[in-house]
Length: 361
Picture 1 (cartoon, rainbow, N blue to C red):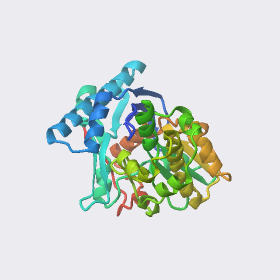
Picture 2 (picture 1 turned 90 degrees about the horizontal axis):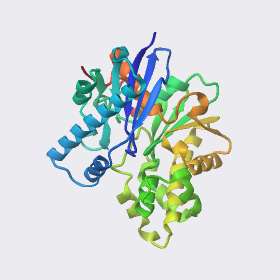
Picture 3 (picture 1 turned 90 degrees about the vertical axis):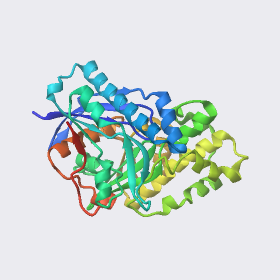
Picture 4 (picture 1 turned 45 degrees about the horizontal axis):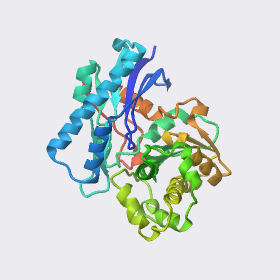
């Protein structure tokens, strides 16, 4: 019988904490149950304020503590909802909340907060956390990690396949003779931020507001001209780069545009920055996961930009598009407890594959 692992993931968008429980073995992983736990608005605002400005050591410590309790609450809610036997749960794979990711700085680092000591103390289950810094210590970008899990799930597909996760940021996995993957750029982060600013909505449901606007080609080309899109892999990014300040700097010559036209254009930025990378690989199939799958406008535009590629949700291939990232960290916890290295060096640029994550018992 496969042992069960819990995966916990809160992404760049901070729209909720995804928690899953999965039986995991060398030959596969299953999704037994899942829960989306609400992310506290006050905590999200504090985190965004830290990312957008400066922070004291005391504020960082408070956020780390509050996130630890938030993740513990989310795990306990999953256990209570499904009346899970904690004796059968081997470990919790905890990604933590990314506050800053700087792989290309003079002193490279990545910061995920959410005290795993609080999570293991409150749940009574060992926790595996702090996955990314080992990869950085080995010379890698520390992201993205999804390609290793995508390869585990989909390497046996007959079609030449690419996988794209559209969360706050978007990343691509190319499954071929050599596993390749990297962040393509912004996913939902700019789209969500712009609709929140002008409509006070958390996201653009089905891309309806974007669909009501007109794509401005001059603005789109200015956005796509950013150095990040020209940079070769390995590469990774986050909210510390693609944020409201970045967008406002690009919008300065375009004050005449209506907000819905800007929404249409930044949605097209997400689509084009993904599609341009997909076409370098020329796959037969593109599988999409993450919150972007729910944006029908984005999905329609992706298919239109990739007429020779079948664009489908991972749901159509038996893997929950909503829960795939949390499942990845259940799998990574399994890998750590079995002392198995994660094959990421061709993705992140690390010198070697490493055994990733620290164990908190």
